[in-house]
Image (cartoon, rainbow, N blue to C red):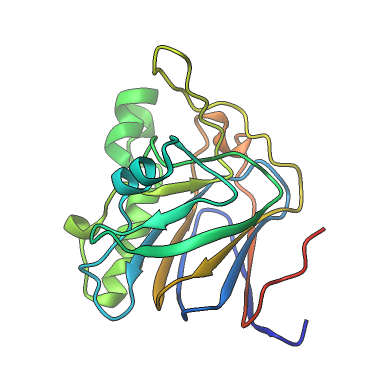
Length: 207
């Protein structure tokens, strides 16, 4: 465990970010289970290079993010690789919740509930970015199955307490997380909980 260079708990409903250096491993841990975590990735040296859901899906030939997935940038480069995954269900199609989508999906009374888009705006503002820099994101631990007709829906999470996913950075990477505050659909079991982040200079042991 001496190779761990950072360990932090992201409280429920809050954003967090950090630069992960090339070759480092980031482990995201779903502490209590069934907690969605929205994620954006930018090149630390040039934020114009950023995660591309479209290129990631095309390069893998699957709509799911899973063990072995290479997270691709809008410039065709591999940003990170998923090297361990004890959950097995992650999404990159459903996007992030926003005040506007809350109002449309769940009623006008939910418009001013906090949402991941607002978390992202707050966090990337620390790096000189704004709303226009938010792209389709990854939703770790979020259960979004796709049926044969191509339809999908956010369902109950399947990640038990302590589930984790490990990413190895293939470039210096600005990682931006929103520990999802959504309480109107089952992505968080209707009760947002903390998540834990470990960053290590080497691969972490798996169980």
